[in-house]
Every structure is written in structure tokens, then in C-alpha cells.
Image 1 (cartoon, helix red, strand yellow):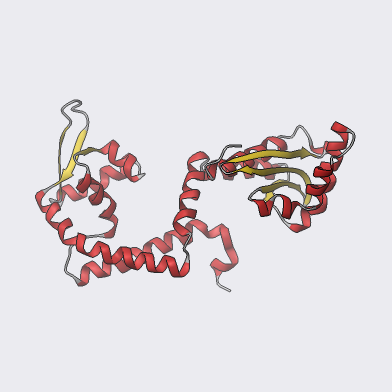
Image 2 (cartoon, one colour):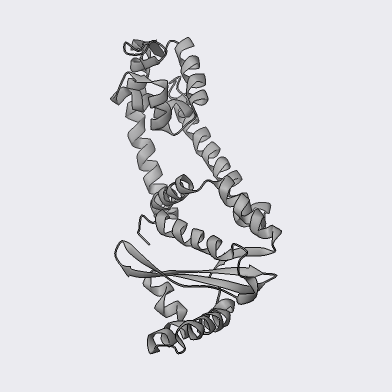
Length: 272
């Protein structure tokens, strides 16, 4: 087993970076073999400017999801190579508008015939190895837009300071899910409805298999809190079975479970 296989999700960023570099290296080799002086990292910028120019640095940063500083760096480099040209914005002289130069347009014209082959090769790879990869990538990006990785790590560290961790469903948590929520429902209503009994005894069939999700708060491997998202209909979730063991209340555990639930629902473009 390789180091990456052992590390699992802990090496997510490293593996994505290596994958990106590997793909870019192979595409660069294609350009080199065709004597086209073009670098893969320029592609999205050239493509964007070829379809809507001129654009300001701020507009480019927004379109390409990069920092202002990164766009300044790459546009300055390409302008020195004579591939871009810039001018001051008529409405605001503090802003610089960027467009492809005649030389840059000619270069991109030589690149465009290759793009179809690149796309076909990408599509073939995705069909063979990961047909849902692009959709999953979009969901991942949306989730990070809602809460950054830094925020997520800090939340986990905060919980870790208390000895608490938030986890998804595992069959070993089934009994704790049933017992915690039965105690909570009996405390609130005095008795359980048949529908509650069915759901608490069969969470996989009644929640997970119907498009919902379960989250658990663990303290020293002991389940001390639960939260469930029930798939009501297309585009909607219902929050239910949010409970924390009496001994662990007022520590922010319920809030963290709720945040996890809302993030999950939001990442799928649904209301909760």
C-alpha cells in the first residue's frame, strides 16, 4: 500500500495537485511536439479573453477564481511576451483592462484545433475511470464556497479540544442513534409514534437509502449526539433527530451538528 493509499483523505490536496500537474505536463508535451509555444496554465485566461475582452484584472480574477495578485503576475508575464496588451479603463484610470494582442490571438488560433482532441481525451478518461468526477468536483467547490477548508479545520480543532469529533454514519452507531433519540422523544412527548420506531430501528432503509444523511458527535469514540437529514422531496431536506446526550449539552455540540447538516444540504443545492 502506497503512502497516499494509507493517508486517504488526509492527502486530498496533495493528490489533486499531483493529478493536475500530471495532466498539465502531458498536455504541455503535446504542444511541444506540435511546436506551439503555449503553456497549459495559460489556457483558461486565453479562452476567457478570446470570448469577452477587454477585461479588468478584477474581472479576470473573478472569472478564473484566482487572487488579484495571481492574475497580475500572469498578465504581466504574458504582456512582456507580447501576447497580451493592456490599457487604462476609461471610467477608472486606476484599473487596467487586458486583452489579447494580435500575436496572442494568432497563438491561440494555433492552439484551438488541439482543444477538441484534449477534450475528447478528457471525456474518454472520465467515462472510463470517473464518470461523476466533474459533478462531484462542482459539489466540492460549492461546499468550500460556503465554508472554507480553514474554517472546517478550525471547527474540528475546536471540537478536538473538547474531545469531540463529528462523523458520518457507520453501522456501529445504529444502536446509539436509536437509544439517544428514543430517550429524547420520550422526554419530550412521553411516547414514540410508530413512524419513529420504524425509522430509529431502520435508519439505513428509512434515511440513507432515500437520499438523506446522518451525522454523529463522538466523544472518546462514544456517540453523544445525532442529527438527521430526511429527504422530503426533490430539492428539500428536513432536519430531524437532532439530539445531544444530557451530560454533554451546552458545549456547542448541537450547534456543530447543525452546521454540518446545513453545509451538507447546501452543498447539494437544497433547502433544509
